[in-house]
Image (tube, rainbow, N blue to C red):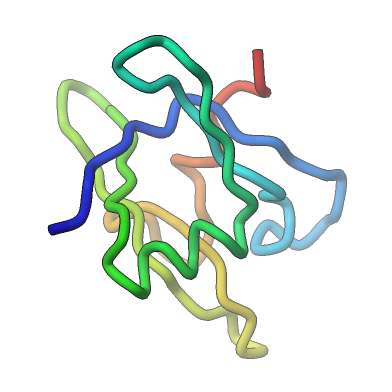
Length: 95
């Protein structure tokens, strides 16, 4: 069974394409240690069912899913986002 991890920040670059902006995601473990995965590692973890990632929005937990851009590029977004990962892009930078 996949373990659940809350994403509380993202590391981003300044690319114009929103599908390419997320470099890494991260958060805190129950022991308060910090975890960080590249977008590629997060995609692999989601696809292999190793981890389930989520963000909290308005009291709800929104799971991250793997989506494909119109040119076939895999990226992560929440299950409620459309083609642009708005919920993730709204998270703060790493601490």
